[in-house]
Length: 130
Image 1 (cartoon, rainbow, N blue to C red):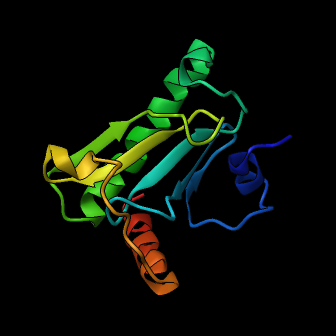
Image 2: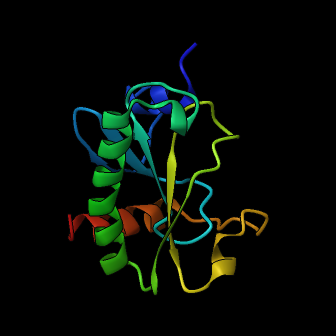
């Protein structure tokens, strides 16, 4: 059965798409730790990040770099933190999170509740720099 991320990639579930190419898809996390929190996933459905073939893993990071640079310009922050947890969805994914300190990446913190308008504004702000 397809993962929720594959359903998002296929357009079966709506998303706030940040970027897409033939192999990767990036979208805003709907339960973000910070404004601009983005998930980057390979279109190839593989559960564990380190089970990806070398070419896909390298390509994912190169794709994510462009997005991270755009988020960094669009969202006030010191840098973009990255993390791979991979327990919540069985589809390899990378979190890009605008941070000002290490505690900004604590997944036990309450998530932001953003309106559709706020998500759309963040998306528009990021798109200006892609």
